[in-house]
Length: 233
Image 1 (cartoon, rainbow, N blue to C red):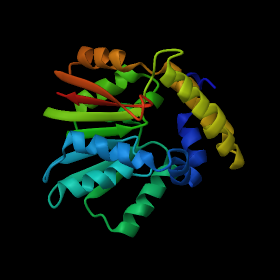
Image 2 (cartoon, helix red, strand yellow):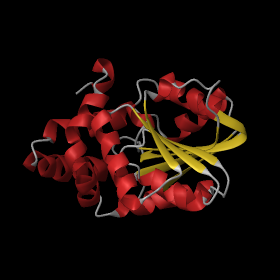
Image 3 (tube, rainbow, N blue to C red):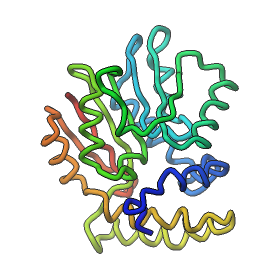
Image 4 (spheres, rainbow, N blue to C red):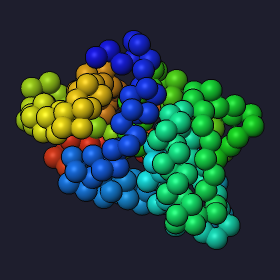
C-alpha cells in the first residue's frame, strides 16, 4: 500500500481509532509505554514550559509531558485524524487534565508565526508524513530558540540484517494476522512499506542537520526495532 502516494494516512488512523490503544498494547506487549517514557525522559520537560505533541494520536505523550510541566506549563496535542483525536479528548476529560489542549490540524500547515513551543515530541508520526524533511523543518520553525524535539518510531534497519529480518517476521506473522481478527489487516499491513520509505538513523541525522538543528543524536531500542531521534535547536 503506497500510503504516501495516496495520502490516506488520516483515513487509516480514523478507521483504526476504535482499537488503536488496545492493539498498541497488545502488539507491543505494552512496551510502547516504556519507549514513550524513555523519549520524554530524554527530552526533560520542566515546569512552566510550553510543549507540543505532534501527530498526538490518543495523547500518550501529552499525558506524560503533562506530569513534567506542572503546575504552570502547557501541552498542545495536535492531530489531523478527527476520530482518534476525539479519543484523546475523552481520555483527558476522564483524567481531568486542565493544562492540555487539543487541536485538529495537519502539522505541516501549522503557522509557526502564531505558535511557538519550548519542546516538541512526536511518536510514530514523522514516518507517516508525506515529506519527512518538511516535517523536521516544521518542528524547527515551531521551536523557540534553544528548544528541543524528539521523535520515536520504528528503526529502519539495514536490509537483511538480523534486526530487519526480525522486524519483517514480527510484522508479517504477528501484527497483520492479529489485526485481521479486527478486520484491520489492510490498515496495519502498510507499516512495513512505510518503514522502507522512512530514512535510517544516519539519514535522519543528516536531514536534521540540513534543516538547521545544531545538535542531533539517534539511539535504538529493543534490539534495534525502534529508534529515538533527539534534536536541539
